[in-house]
Image 1 (cartoon, rainbow, N blue to C red):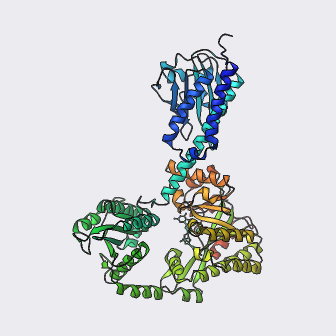
Image 2 (cartoon, helix red, strand yellow):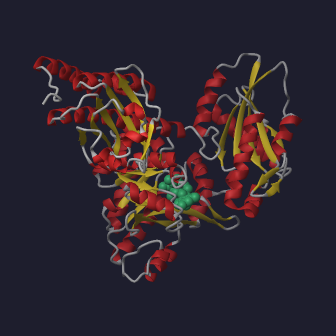
Image 3 (cartoon, protein in one colour):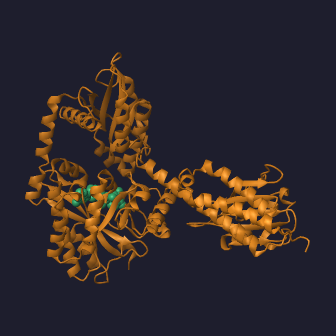
Length: 637
Ligand code: C2E
Ligand code: MG
Ligand code: MG
């Protein structure tokens, strides 16, 4: 038994003690966990490899990590008693060493006493070149992450060994510590990414509105007395026509292209953001000495209007803009955006193309009044011009309709069907939102009762509540009154609020959530990932559900990174005991991926657009089952 190397009790104790200390440091030190990054864990990994080499009496210890598909292992870090000695080939492919891959994916540990003869090693020595030759025995432990086996820790000994259960157990415990670290790292990277997304317009990579506010506020503070801040509100001319010709994808291409041009036309310290489909805002600090005047230079205009080639067609885009100066015309970012937009609207009254407007205070009242009279929301309410459309929410694994989201539309006599995006903000700023919200609650509850009375008593309806309405003192009583009168359980009404409600007025929002939850209503965080909140914050809120925003879903079938993010959100959501809903599912491929991730429910155009009640009822009538509906209909017999 000369190949069996044992430790003296003292030696083993000391090393195990060291290992335990290492682990304690990681499992319990908040500070270490907070500063985890790819760079900061490298020395930790190396140090631990060294400790394990001593503990196991091995000459070499390695950490290998899988790619997402578990088809490739990459050497992450190693310790070698000969000094830094990486193998010439630091990747292993599944098809080169199938037995080895099979073993580490399915076994907690893999002990190979004799590397030369063990069939599991078939191909491994060849793959890793001659440098493997001095090693005679190998012990591996799999690193099991949240989503499955993520890699392996591998000890190599020059002497033949007989690996005992003690060896296996120790190595497995180290592998678990690595798993803990890697899971934390992944979670942190995801949160950082979500945070970044909260400030980025995903279509163009420009700033989004939040980021614009934040960065511009900072920049305004640094302006000197010789400087002014210029705000430009810009939109593309006749963009709807362009979209009609080029379709939605073509429209997006145009916007992306234009954003790139803005990016080069307005270098730093200018700040550019996209705040609506084809709406951009630009902030630039300018010196009074070389006052560039109230119009953009010819050079910039030419750069922005050069023809673009979109989907093989040459497209000529022009743009219009309104301008305003800080501090002459406004004293904060919010007002700056508003007055620059007013300058634009005003100029657009003269011409619909290449309009240029410089803000004058006299424009203000004029525009506000005309907007209000055009969109007389109160009249819309009085004349019953609002309507709720319903979009099905289906159970992800089966496609069964479990409920609907109620989405408001305004059937305007002159302007046709108006989307909520175009009037909810106005309703909020004029204070009419609570009235509209109450109408929505009443209408949705009445409709839900009708469906439940027809035997579809399992259905739920989600409604969207504006921040101001959510915090309104009358809301809880009103909700209770409506549900009681209709005779539906509060549990079947889901209240959707956006993340920012929860952030802006934390205590009030938390109290309101707790109050509504105690009454039995369900609370859902809409557009999850687009605001500022993080999982750590959500943990403390009485929330039932998160709805992953459409922007995360749109790339999951083409971009692995997006898919990984969504997978993490789904997993973390579930860990917190939340229902997870994915919004904006447009293709079968996206559905399949979400199914694989174990997402709870989904909603999106792939299943159905938001529809008026009559069309939802028609869908129910088309199915063979009386009161159950599976979507998409094309997949049902
Ligand atoms: P939301 O609550 O996030 O609603 C989802 C929006 O995404 C809806 O737009 C819906 O039509 C759209 N959508 C659903 N599936 C897909 C898809 O597969 N692809 C794409 N591209 N879009 C999809 P909608 O109806 O225009 O509503 C926009 C926003 O207006 C809503 O966003 C919500 O924030 C707000 N809103 C709607 N109804 C109300 C309401 O009654 N009260 C309040 N306060 N806000 C409302
Ligand atoms: Mg919603
Ligand atoms: Mg949403």
